Image (cartoon, rainbow, N blue to C red; front, side, top):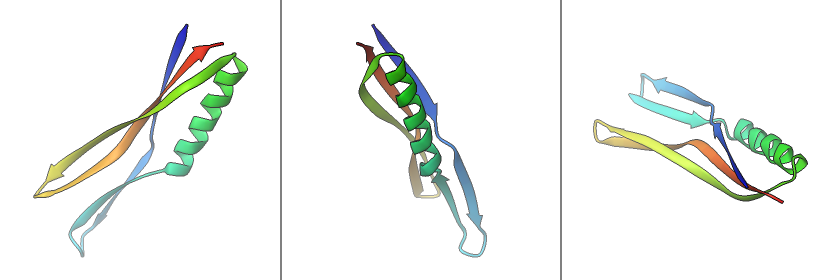
Amino acid sequence: MYKTVNIHTRSTYWTNKEANTEELIVDTDDLAHEIEKVSNELHNDNYEITSILPINSGTISNGNGYFQTESVIIVAKKM
């Protein structure tokens, strides 16, 4: 039996009006904490993690683009 868990990232959107730029920054510390928490829960429920997949998304505006890790999917197998 397999189990999948989706963890959405938290991010901050910054606008620098002087430089006319916009930035979207993923909170990697928070994401790492969430992955660790879910991984430990799966281990305690007797699951073995088989993969952690990043899900990326992005956009292009005015010739500029960005991509970010929107979420991660953890796939685990019951031991």
